[in-house]
Image (tube, rainbow, N blue to C red; front, side, top):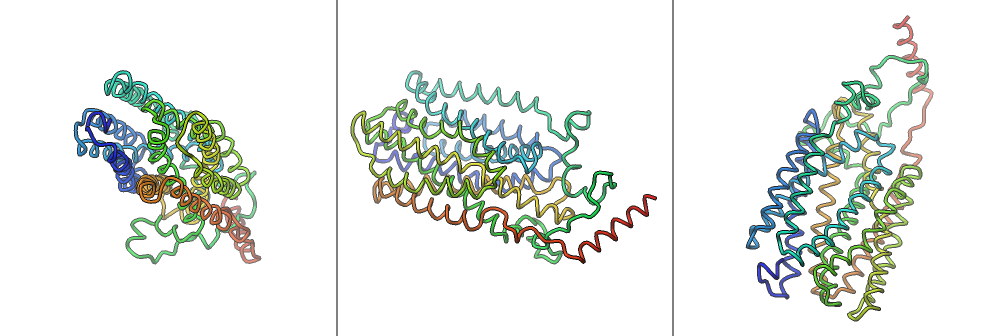
Length: 444
């Protein structure tokens, strides 16, 4: 489209493509934290969700009808801000619905489903643009958004469903803040575990922490590592998005359809293996999956240096390497959100009065989105600049180094360690016993 409609020379396609990718990512980075705070403050997630769909629909029309670079950048900015609302709302609803113990499997399944759309988009977009020009992709995009809008209108949040007798109960009643106030049942343990003091937020805090207490949680090295994992994963995906199409055009003289088909080897493994990786993460914890996924990416990116211009054989070698890359990336999707959710859940249990009945789950989703989009922007800009400066092969060496650093950090700091689970001291048992006896006396 940049070449056909805007008549840009071939030498400027890479930089302008990277700029459009970065505009989307940067707007998402800016708007994600705002979306998270709004989501946790609102009584429901549905209205922000619907707002995101409407803005995205308008931005899509502007993108396909824009006739200059400024209009395209504005459209991408609107797409990024609306995507932030939808991303944050979607992940918050996911955590509300399945709970922290099932986030990995659910995230893996969702990323697999997302892969279908990401897989179909370049293929269908390439076919339609090749056959119909801008009309086909515009009609398809607006139609899908219309279906999406109807589905979101029909969606019923879990806490609304429970008011009418559906579901397993109000998520707010299942959250940690209500555990201390409910009556003791016959199946409850006699003695309650004390909260880990490492997760208790002191009352005396700066004004910024009081207004946004989730910032305090970033003192936790596990949460920082989880966000680093998200950042590097998104950086890698941004680098692939920015460079695979140009490699297809420069090395193999591919058209838009053939370039779109190059993404199939990257995305199909995620569709198949995403739920598997999520299930393993829920059962074994995120450490194994992080180390395995990023550790295996190191030799794969080194091998991508052998990609060379040529015919069918060179194309098959490149597609095989992209398949290996996609397989490893499938294992990097669930661990970061699972780790973030587990850490934030501990802070919520230890500080229910600070985070309120809804908890900070939308905010942690927004921070994940913030980090992901920052990585996408960084990846697209960095990959384009490095490819032009030092070549495609050496660019992949940089990506391999980032993967190695992430695997090491995941091994050192990801997952719960024995020290994270406090041991019950005699004093804790005495306090718990007195508390239990008091509650029994009051019931009698």
